[in-house]
Image (cartoon, rainbow, N blue to C red; front, top):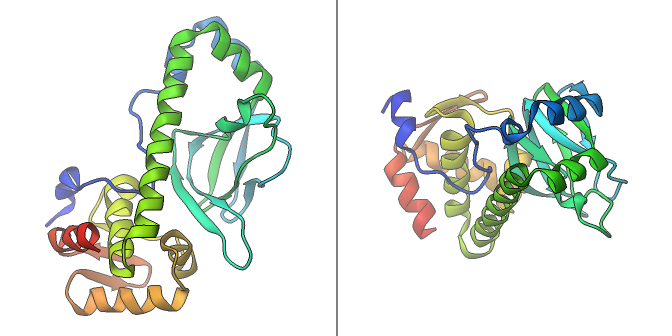
Amino acid sequence: MNDNDSDVLPTSTCATHVYDYSCFASLTRDEMVLLDSKAVTITYKKGETICKQGSFASNIIYLERGLVKVYLEGNPKNLILTITPSGHMIGVPSIFEGNNTYLYSVVTYVESVVKIIDILVFKQLLLQNATFAFHILNIMNENIAQTYARFFCLTQKHLHGRLADILICLSGRIFKSLKFDLPLSRNDLGELTGMSTESVIRLMKELKDDGLIELSGKSITLLDVSRLMKISEHG
């Protein structure tokens, strides 16, 4: 299979859908001027924290470029909810009355550019522009559906199925290619799949020995997607 085959890869549960249509396109010119006047663009280096779980949420965050992990902090392990690529909102649940803190932490996998939007202006735009509000609601609904799928994977699939699920998702939704350089550590993969780092390393070797994937440093190539899909489905 070649990179063009990635067009038919199934999507899975590690990342939310990437929209071709920006929700900001439904704003009027005056509304965009208002939004931009109450927003600031910041570049974060790899490994930097964009927002922290439990901290006061005074802004909505729009990821213009980059790749981040959204996760719940725990002891001793964190739980990664999703890997979020460019074009996504972060912190939208914080717009609800009575909930003025971030429900999760967000850390960059690569250098990332974000637009920090004043939450009061964001709420104002939701109230006055029904089309914009509708698009935000669609995004939130898709995020909820993705979260349901994540927890089904974590609670109902065996270890092989969880890892196959994540590899298919990374290939199909994040990197759009059967071969990609993985910015995630084995520990990150463990947090994504709900298994130990040692288990991730062992299972990755098994998939390699079985001819399902090829590993070269941080580079991963999916060699047999149909078999990985079967493992994911029946795992």
